[in-house]
Length: 379
Ligand code: ADP
Ligand code: MG
Image (cartoon, rainbow, N blue to C red; front, side, top):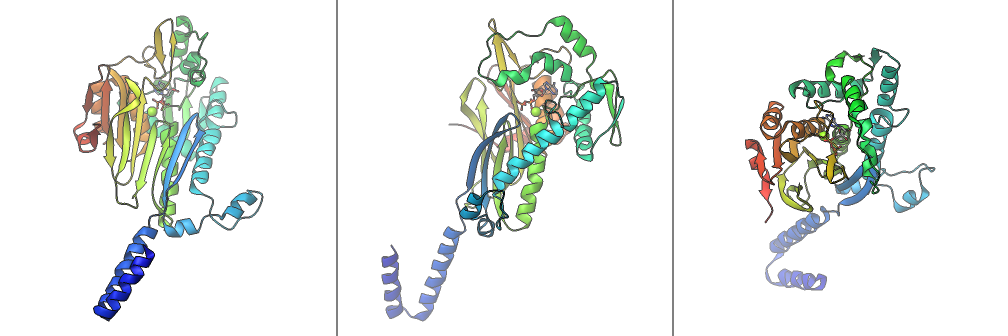
C-alpha cells in the first residue's frame, strides 16, 4: 500500500504539477490524521457495589499520550509516577469510595452505617454530610411523589429478606421471613418517619435506611463529574460506563456513531428486546424482577419490595428502563416505577422529565411518548 502511494505521488509530480501534489499531500495528511484520531477504546470489566462494572472509554490522542507508560504501570502505586492513572482505575476507586465511605449499610465506617447505628440507639437528629443530604433530598422527593412506592427506610424489611445473600449461586435452604417479623419491621419503616432540615436528618421509630435502590445511580453522578473534568482537560472523547443496571453514556464516539444501550428481554435474559439509540450524555437505569431473586417451593421472590406490604412488588411490570440526564433520578425512578406499574409509573417518570419503557408481565412494551424517539426494536 505504502509503495503504491509513493508511486502514485511520483506520477502526479511528473504529470500534473505541484499544486495537485500539494492537495494530494494534504488529503493524505487529513486521511492519516483521521485514522490517528481514532485510538482504540480502553475497555475493562470489574466488580464493585456488588455488581459488574464495565467501561469503554475513548480518549483523545492528548489523553492517551498523557497516560502512564507501561514501565510506570509496572512500577506500581508505591512509586511516584509521571503519567495519568488510567481512567478506568480512577473510576473504580471513585465507586469503591462511594460504597465504603457513604452508601453501604453493611460496611462499618460508611456514613449510612453510622446513621443506622445512631438511629438504632434512639438518636432522632443526625447531621449528614452535604453529599448524603443531597442524595437523601432527591430520595425523599421521589418517595413523596410516588406515594411511598419508593422508600429508602425499608432497611429492616430488606434485611429480613436477606436480599444481599441471594446474589450467591447457592440459594438452597433459603426461607422467606415470617409474617409477624415483617409486620413489625414494616411498622418501623416509612418515609413519614424521616425528614430533612438543611443537612440534619430528623427521624423517629429508629428507622433503618437502605439506599440500595440509588447507589448505582449516585455513582453515575460522580463518574459524570470525573468525565466532564477529563473532557475539559482535552483528554476524553466519550465513554459508556455501566454499573450493574445503571448506565452512563457520555460525549462522542470517535467514529461519529451513536451509543446503543440494549434492553434485556425479561423472558429470556440472554437476549435483547431492542436498544436505545442515544447521542451525548444520558443515564439509563433498569429495574427488573429477573435481576435478583430466589425460588422457594416454586414461588419466586425478587428484590424490589412493595413498601405497603413488605413483600416483593407484584405490579404488571417485569422490567422498567428509565432514561434521564441524571443518574440518581434514573435509578430511583426505575425502582419506583417498577412498584407503581405501567400507568402510574409513566406519569411519575414524566413528572420528573424522564422517559420510561416498560416490559409488562406478558412481554408487551409500553413507553412514554418521548421514549419512542430513542427506542429501536431488535430484528
Ligand atoms: P438494582 O439494585 O438491582 O439495580 P433497584 O435499583 O431497583 O435494583 O434497587 C433495588 C434495591 O433497593 C433492593 O435490593 C433494596 O435494597 C432496595 N429496595 C427494594 N425495594 C425498594 C423500594 N420499594 N424502594 C426503595 N428501595 C427499595
Ligand atoms: Mg433503582
